[in-house]
Image 1 (cartoon, rainbow, N blue to C red):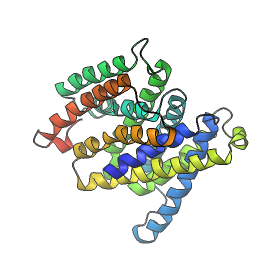
Image 2: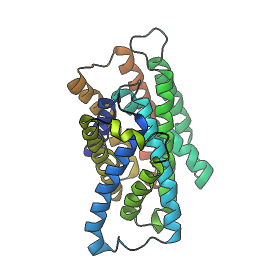
Image 3: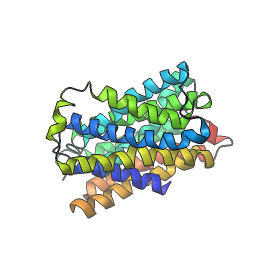
Length: 289
């Protein structure tokens, strides 16, 4: 899972490096390149697994729902990267577990345990610390909101997959969701017309983001879940924030402040509480987060 966490951190760094690019156009470029890579991978799989066969109606509906979540998640990451550094976004993105718990309760009837509420309180304290008025490099409120919105979109994607995984072809859905997401991204205001404004560096960043995020990190997580308990996978992804802060320092020369470290540490501590509690319970790998 360290490979998936590193890939996710690279994805965030790529978004941060293209901070001046038109957000809608950059998101469209990322999704289009990611779709092309995944479709090529699907063709390689299709010769042996039947992945190229037309999807049934149920799978097509699931793909459409995942595509909406994908566009929303990437768009909100883009907006968050306008004012927040990669490490901050990575830390905030780990709050996905709380959204998963809430969505799982509402949509799948999976009642969350008390440890989720305790973890949410600790994580909220971390956000509060990092946004402390007057603190050096305090996290921008709008950026925090966009990062949390992206986390919510990712949580909904996960819950949809969890509720349908037994009846869908995961590799096929993963490829088709990106194709559909790229098509939906064309509806973002100015997305298509702004592609000409992207510089070669922006296109390079989009290619890196596409390969690292929607392709590599997502596929590594899918394969890891087949071999490891889900809670182990989620705990491994907590290192995304560590990798993001380290890469941020190497690429941009920007070290996190004490306030940022304190806030991010509290968020990661809060997120780890329900996951560690799940790890210690019998049958935890199949329960709610």
